Image 1 (cartoon, rainbow, N blue to C red):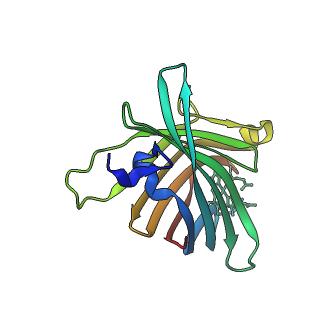
Image 2: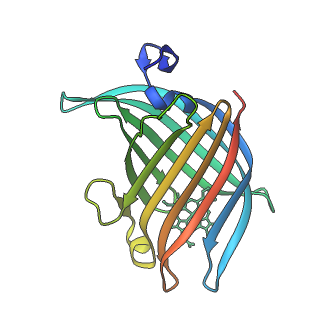
Image 3: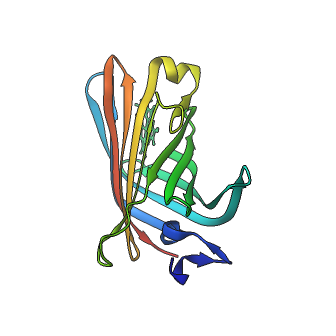
Length: 193
Ligand code: HEM
């Protein structure tokens, strides 16, 4: 791993590129409605911080990047999504975990394996997935959500090129009688500090 991924003596590997404050105003959210769906242009700020490392069962050591994402609807400037989470990297097997909570009573642990770039010019993509039926990378949700607005699966892909970050994510929902409705979010952000 290059020395550029070391912060305060800890190697953050592929997560080092996340660290900083990012802002982006090209977001589009597609969310379910009882009749059809709603498309909301949005802007957001995501703050990623290097948060040290942790050892599990005396065997696994993970590097930790903590984040807070605050998303506002362009039409009325109201915050309509708030997310707290961690990205974790295990250098032993190059696996990634993104664990996060949203203030609807939903918690997600999504995992993935980092594909090594085939050459230096290839972009680094952080990709993770969770499935409500998985005992490992899964989803836990409050009773109301489980019964009426269930998250069944989640995928998230983040690409960082210099000071530009692009992401796309799909949250599969069982809601309003729809099965596996694709609630999607995409945005492009710039690192501002
Ligand atoms: C940029 C990120 C996101 C934005 C802007 C966003 C926005 C929205 C909006 C506008 C709705 C419709 C709310 C309503 O009709 O009252 C919604 C619903 C929902 N979202 Fe998200 N969302 C985001 C990410 C997520 C993620 C990551 C999850 C979970 C993994 C999630 C889970 C849900 C659920 C379960 C609902 C159904 C609740 C409902 O519509 O009443 N969302 N979201």
